[in-house]
Amino acid sequence: MSVLFDRIALIGIGLIGSSLAHDIRRLGLTKEIVVATRSADTLKRAEELGLGDRYTTSSADAVKDADLIIVSVPVGASESVAKEIAGSLKPGAIVTDVGSTKASVIAQMQPHMPDSVHFIPGHPLAGTEKSGPDAGFPGLFEGRWCIFTPVAGTDETALKRLRGFWEALGSKVDEMDAEHHDKVLAIVSHLPHIIAYNIVGTADDLETVTESEVIKYSASGFRDFTRLAASDPTMWRDVCLHNRDAILEMLARFSEDLAYLQRAIRWGEGDKIFELFTRTRAIRRSIIQAGQDVDAPDFGRPHALEKK
Ligand code: NAP
Image 1 (cartoon, rainbow, N blue to C red):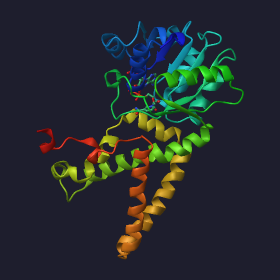
Image 2: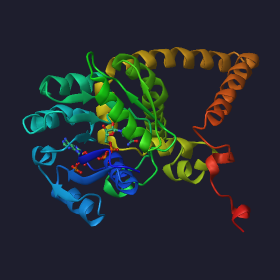
Image 3: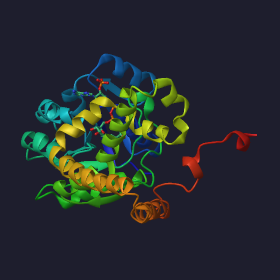
Image 4: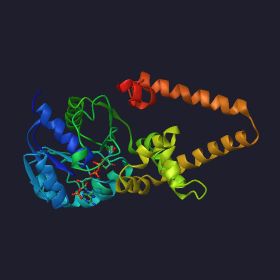
């Protein structure tokens, strides 16, 4: 593949930043990767893993002469990063991010971006429950969506270049406004995580069932929630605080629907329960047909006799 940007600066080198580094290198999309992260420990680890060509704890230094800057930090840190890099950006550079909430990131970053750069907010819908530079791997973005939420007046050529970058990583790119993104993500990503954190917390708080029983018998359903509930606490705290309105709106809908189900169980309304469970089963089939998961039973976990 050909070089798309002469120099790429990665600000933040956790799961997303390091996955980007692997792919940029593997696909030869730049001549130089500059890695910046806040702590000396993470920077050292990034260097040991060979994720970049140059390493610094100064975001301002990292962005000098970079043609593409990708900010991959918790969304609550967006403003401080924007302030730090603003004075060092090269005219014509593209600044993007990968944050899971978009209206808040735009509010935090856009006021600090000089007119001479192209600021294009983005969000790859790809990830795992792991974090840090060791968590990244090549191919994370392959076949996944990346959503841009461009602000009014965004330069079409810059948009096209950034689209070309994500397509080179194997992603499909969509565009929508930031408020719509935040509503969609509230239901497909934020609520599932909040529900998982909550159910795992509830199990942990129960007095009549011991923790060892919860763990011992977890394969009957509980453990599928624990993957989401093991996600990075800083990242998900920031998502909750920075997509507050959309999350509260979806939580209200969720509570209403849960009350409906609760009532159906209380009154023994089997037809209502059956109708809901049949409708939801079809959603999983649609996800598999859309190529967003595989059809392997039990999420593809190996089972004892299959391994032999
Ligand atoms: P991560 O693995 O926890 O890495 C976070 C990176 O941000 C590290 O380099 C860390 O630096 C830095 N950082 C943390 N707090 C900071 C602060 N206050 N100021 C400046 N830098 C800070 O996180 P991640 O999973 O890559 O997530 C990064 C972004 O991607 C988030 O905005 C998240 O919403 C978004 N995202 C995540 C996923 C996912 O599944 N994880 C998917 C899509 C989008 P140090 O280690 O040096 O402190």
